Image (cartoon, rainbow, N blue to C red; front, side):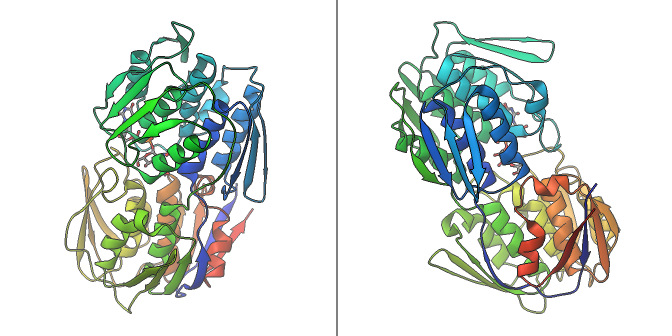
Length: 420
Ligand code: EPU
């Protein structure tokens, strides 16, 4: 099992180009199934989750190759619509292949997906929406057997109880080739949804309203392949900026998506960091001290503060002057990183969905285990700021979302090695 060994105490400093977005690339890879042609995705991050998506595509009969941040997918021939449980378990996004396969073939067999353990992650909204679109769904022995009653899904008027990112994506994927019009009310507004819709429009899909809470899709059956550049990863961006703030450093994040990162940047700025933006670059300079954030940091669907940035910002605020309060509203169990931060000397009290972070002067190195992707990244941020050496195990969690993280940190002058 590999580990990261991090020697803390160095201020991060330098320029880093932002990687492509994992959470945008995954549904877009699933969407290539709908085109029945060749797609080229540039700016695709080299991550274990992306390789899992490529394995699913190849299993269905597509030809997916990956080289130098470009994924090429030829989806002319599909021969398999049943995804094995083992592939489904590799990541949460495997469930997105349900909508894409239904859109392309009118049938699929999937199972409950894997992914980070952040509390219960049901797929009831996905299934309810598919049923309304004319899909007959039977669950037996852990397998979810889906078939369009009329051979093809049909449009529907849908209202989501919560703006779920995954459910919105699955509905879009099923609806672009369905018969008639689909209206999704209370749709997720995350930038990655817009990137997916932009990709699909380039393939000939008729979609409007993405980025707002009502999305309208008119089904078509003449989609084709295209070339698309994956948007930058706003959460990886938030992570590297948080690491730099934690070490009281200074950095330029290039290839950044500034407006998409605004909900995060506006909170980070309250710590007293200077932030300047322009021409896809974010410049951050942290003073010698960080201030606690006085307003409660509430995670919310976009354009609220992103849940995926909660842990990494918490690592930076662990050594701020004063007390910051987080409220996690998206996932039931997304404070699993706090035990490791406390082991490193942080003062964090978790009370249900609230975490109270009282800033301490300094963290110290420790031996810790990554609990999930973003929680693991928070441990890296804390380790870079801490006195002494930290060893992080279960780094497979971190590799799911950060491309060569030790090289990125090294580029900023941090001391981080992969061992084993
Ligand atoms: N939910 C339900 N029923 C459903 C679907 C969702 O109750 O049918 C609940 C979930 O249990 C959760 C909430 O709704 O409490 C939000 O879930 P959502 O469906 O929006 O999240 P997701 O699609 O599973 C994506 C990202 C997550 C990110 C969330 C929220 C991908 C691959 N994953 O997950 O990213 O935290 O949206 O923004 O896009 C990460 O990258 O580390 C990560 C976990």
